[in-house]
Length: 133
Image (cartoon, rainbow, N blue to C red; front, top):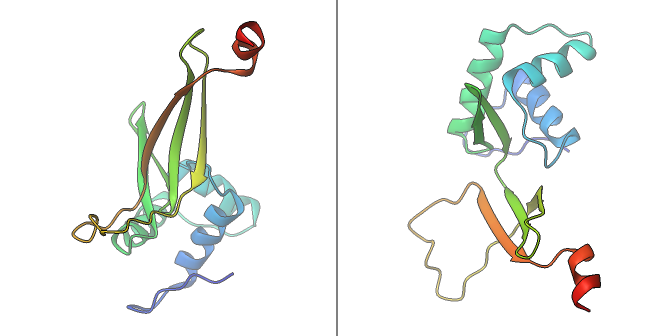
């Protein structure tokens, strides 16, 4: 699947990095993860070039910065949300990512372009549900 962008031309490097994100859908990737994936394909791209291409993809709202860990930014495709599941009984936590399509009848998000986000869900895990059930 090709990167679609009707407003501007897409470079070969943008397409390459976009395809890496598509192959690892739902995974937050750093610039170093991208560099490793590019080098596996026997193509070379400097860190500086990767940063420049990532900035272009950010400005086109194709990816977004999902987290910052230990001074390293991690990026995801812009239609993904970080979801954290938490058991309110034992405190068990699990993180995942999912594609979410937002639809609102009154369109309250018309003044903002939603690129991604975080959703926290609270419930009962499988182990605790056995104890309760």
